[in-house]
Amino acid sequence: MDWLKDHKIWLGVIVLFILVIVAANAVGGGKKTTNTQINQQSASEAKPKQQKPQPVFNIPSLIGKNIDQIRETLGAPADGSRSDPTAEQSQFGLDEWDNTFKKEGIELLVTFNPATRVVIDFFVSTDDPSGATEDKDRLIEISGLSENADNYRVEFVRTIKDPNSFTGIKAIPK
Image (cartoon, rainbow, N blue to C red; front, top):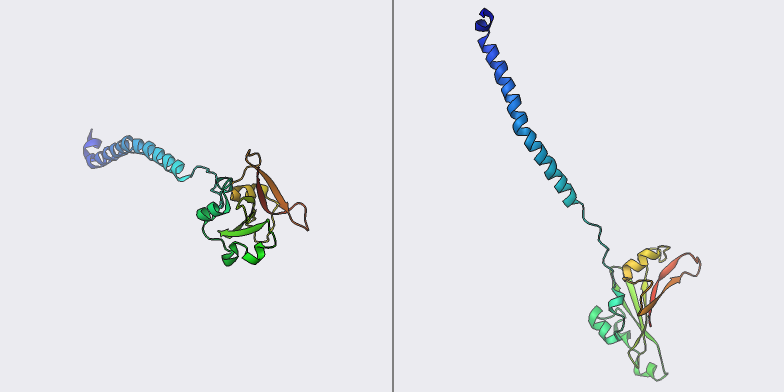
């Protein structure tokens, strides 16, 4: 007992220290779980869901439109004054003319009949700086096309030098 009387202060400090540890575990343990849950929620919110990228040119939405309706949708062609053949050129009986539209470094070439205004086909160039790609999926992605659509047919346009590479993708309305 004498020992306890002599060391009251130290005994009080030790008991207080133990109480602080117990209290911290009781309070901090719940927060730890909450923080873990919050961190897990934040991590799952931080990861964006894998969404299909938006096409640069949504060609399926243009299928069935005439060249004038396409110009209303996409704006003025990059061809400027060459958007339509001149009267002199039309006298030669042209049955094909084209307009080029540019967006995000990609070109869309729309071939149409200048007399009827009916679109013949759409060609979307690759976005690869070399002008050629082997990635068919990327061509489909930037054009918004599908290889098995009912209202158009798809053709991959091969490069002259390498039959495994493509300059772009073509959609031909059925």
